[in-house]
Length: 233
Picture 1 (spheres, rainbow, N blue to C red):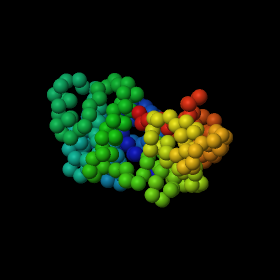
Picture 2: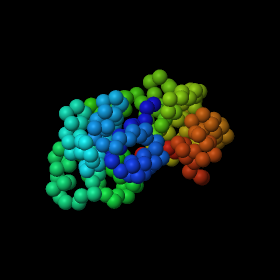
Picture 3: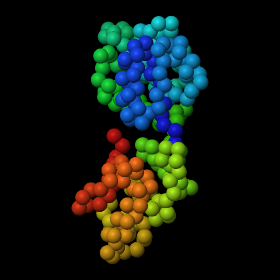
Picture 4: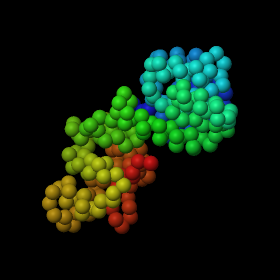
């Protein structure tokens, strides 16, 4: 699965690098440009899903780059500017930007806005849309039609029962399933002393899909209750 790629265009290296650190920590691919001209060149040669764009830059500024981008693409654009006047904000948004963040900004707020814009974009026609038969959870892609599981660009081999357990939890994110519920749903027979059977299967799934099975990223244990996959933030 290819991760979303964010293009950050800002003439201040410290700001570019700061945003890049936070984006990479969230698992995004990051491309960097120091002005609008460089940003447009990168855009022509790469698939980009969102642009973080400073307004005040040399060569081609953010407003003019935004206008040029909108001639060819529809990905979200978040404008950055040290200016706080309403007119600057209005100009940025009327030229095609989707959101506006004033410097200095909280990097966590910017990340939250990026995630929000990407979620909206994924549902739009022309955006990168999740395929009908796929369940996507962070870097994991579960194809329920082909029974394939990918973590990043690596295929994970699961047994039919392991896949069924993972699919059950993935289709019902945020819902805690008891061991008995998992057994009866997947094995399709009454649960009778099934605790160990389910626990062994959960452990094997974690060994295959988790980077650190002792600190699972995907399948969470709710002590005394069962297992779940967290809802999307």
